[in-house]
Amino acid sequence: MEIWQIVVICILMLPIFLIANYVVVKKAASERRSRDDRIERAVAASVAASYTDKSKRFESWSRYKAAKKRKKD
Image (tube, rainbow, N blue to C red):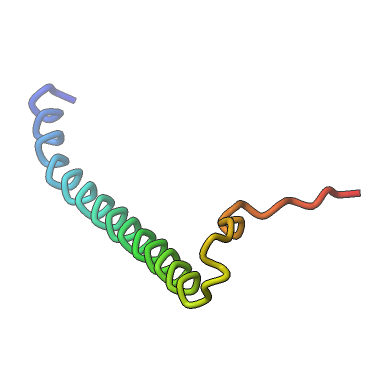
């Protein structure tokens, strides 16, 4: 293969790479946005619940800790 053919192939592959990159970045951004929205809704619901019940206002936030894994016997 001659050098000019390699250069032409590289030039033709550039738009394909840019389009694929755009699709991947757009999908990652939408997933991050949905995850952030889900977290924000969970925190808002938790804060709202803690303020409706005055006795829970100073409760520790233990429900946000990771679930403990069971040991296999």
